[in-house]
Structures are given as structure tokens and as C-alpha cells.
Image 1 (cartoon, rainbow, N blue to C red):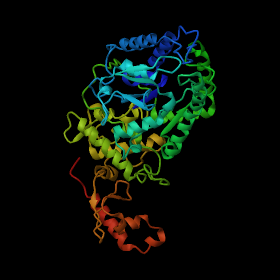
Image 2 (cartoon, helix red, strand yellow):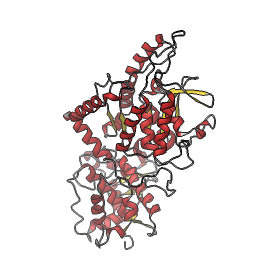
Image 3 (cartoon, rainbow, N blue to C red):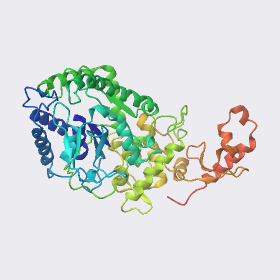
Image 4 (tube, one colour):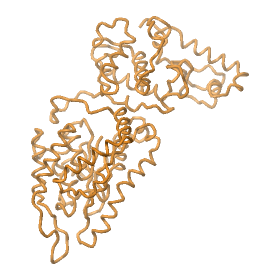
Length: 497
């Protein structure tokens, strides 16, 4: 999902709807800015009423946006919502001139919208509305409603992004699904006047100068866990405040100061962390935003896995002891998604379906193939190979561990016929708890220690045993015996795999 306000809204449309590469978006954006800011009014306000007049020709902006759309092979009047499932959910923020509220124009349907205007709005109209910066361009009129640049209400649309993501992906488990949130600032806020009279301008500028950074800081504070696991990044080059939105001739200043910002050793480390989490932009050929495939797309859930204690047990030297229940559940979702997309392997997972799960940058395509092949007896034809779901989950665990610790690899896989291979056949097996209180929990021992789900943990003596300290457990011989009995039941061989 991607969202933006004003110039950020235009970039969001270029990347998310028109499916440009980053380089293509930069080229189109620079050309757009050079076109629309050619001729400026000499007097930007009415001498009689004092009301601010647009400084630039709004028609130039509209035509330039339509040209960008047309050059991507789309009709210039194509709708923002074209009836197809978007590859990337995209929204832009504008401000309703009547209600003074922010509105989101999206390329995906939403429940509870007040009318069908959002289904009918054209792509160029949405782009035009979000970029209608007061004093620069006239407000946009759509079905009798007036819209303008959303900079006053959401100059930094982080909160808008989070709201849209919760509506789109569900409110209960949003953070575990997130690889990372990326926020890109424009340096110091691009100060734009707001209001009809000159006396309104000053306070609006002060508001905008502080709102952006406050929003970013507030988002960090409200989602500190996300930030601590490298799930939130913000890049905001400083010292760009002297460059106005209409000063395309100062591109060299922007470039030089942004490069200086990226050359700072602290920022280089920050950028490297971001690349490790998100990778770099994959190369795609024949990008066509019109003919979207109706085939279900692979999940990117793998990139929600992180190195926090929820997903990797700390202070564990053993490769397999690091497995946790939350990570296990994500492995299961990915594995069954791959199974559903496998074409020729009933009940199993094709390598090609598994391969599509990754961005092939981190982990690389070579790494994915190498880890997949670890559990193959015959490694001569990896692309046409297949694995049971249990093995796929084990492979995901290995990729997860080695993504954050590349030097660590399991030492017990080289004898592929050994006990570890047999244990991995049972990776997705659960056995009922045998505690006397009938807690209703189930147990899995893929991490060689044991973890449980369901039922009531407070009633489970075995769960309390695992959570207890060494002194307490020294006297809990019955609890230890129950744990060992369940582990032995879990070890019983499955049918040949």
C-alpha cells in the first residue's frame, strides 16, 4: 500500500497505479514540474478583494497529468478505480474545501462511503485534487464538491496510511503482517499558503512547518515496537526549505543536499538497515497497468518476520531452539498459501510457487534455492521439485534465521537421512496435552523444547513447568515426565515422505 499528499500523491499514483519504476517516476515527475511551472501570474492576489489567486495555469497542470497517464498506455479519462484488483493499493489525500476535512481517493473499493463519487472519479481528477496547492493552482471541483491539496490536514500522511491499512487488511493483526513502513519527507516542509486572504497565510505556514515532523514523531511513539524491529523507517533530507515547489531550476540543490544527507555515515547505516529489511526495487519487464492478472498473487508475509523475541527466541544457541509459536504460525500461513498456488503437486508445494513468495533480493534467489535443496535427496532438478508442507515450514524457519544471522546454518542437516530430517517431517504436527487438568492445549516440539497453543495455559501444569525456574522444576518430576511423554508421541514416525 502507498499513499501521498500533494507532490507525494502524484508520486504515489506514478508508483502504485501507473506502476512506474522509481527511475521512471523521477523522470516523469521532473518533466511534469518543468511543464506546469513555466508561466506565473505577476499579481497573485486580487487588488479589490485581497483574495489569493492561483499563480499558475491550472489547465497546464491538468493536461500535463493526462499526458503522464496517456504515456503509460491508459486512456486519459481512465477511472481511479478500474474494476480490477490493484496490485498495489494506492490512495491520495485531498482536503474538502466545503467541510475542511481530509478525504482519501483510492484505487480500491471501501465500505461505507457516502456516495458513488469515489467509484466514478477519474485518475487525473484524483491527481489534480491532491496537487491543488493553494496559491499555486485553483481548487478542483468534482460533482459540485471542492477539493484542494491535503497538505494542511495531512502533509505527512502516516496516520492516513495506517488508517487505510487497518481498513484494508483488518484491525486485529496489522503489525505482524508488515515488512516495514517507509516515510519519505520533503526536507523541511514545503511551505504553502492556505486561505483566501493574505492575512490567513502566516498562521497556515507555521502550522505546516511543524505538523509534518510532529506526525512522524507521534507515529514513532505510537508504534515503537514496529520501529524497534526495523519495521519503520523515515528519510527526510534537511536544508531544503529554500527550494519551493515551483522552483524546478533548483533541482541541483535538491540532488546535492540529498546526496550529502545519504553520505553521512549514520544515514548510510540507516539506509543499509532499510535495504536489509525491504531489499531494493526488483526489475520487472513489460509492466502493463491495464492487463492485470486475475491469478492470486503470492503473499509477502515472510517480510513480517523479524528478530524480536516474538519471532526468534533470545539467548538460544541451538538453531532450532529459536523457533517461536508466532513465527511458526506465519510459516504455516505462507506454506499453505504456496500449496494453494502449486499447480501440479496435490498436497505438496512446488518450488516455483514457493519461489514467488520472495522479492528475491533478501533472501536472494540463489539463497532460496540453496535452502530449499537442503531437504532434497535428489538435487538434480530443483526448479521442478516439491516438498510437503512440513518441510516448507522448516525451510521458512531456516531462511528466517539466516536472513538476520547469515553466518548461522544448521549443523545437523548434512546427514540428510538422520534424525533431524525425520523431525522436520513432523514440523507441523500437534499432539494433545496430557496434563491431568485437561487444559485442552496442543503441543509441538519442532524446536526440541516444546510450545503449545489453544486451551487454557493457566491450568496446564506442563506449560507452567516450561515457564518455571530451575529450582521449582527440580521437584516437578511428574510434569517433566508428561512433557517427555508428549515429546515421544510427537516423535513417532509419519508415513514415508
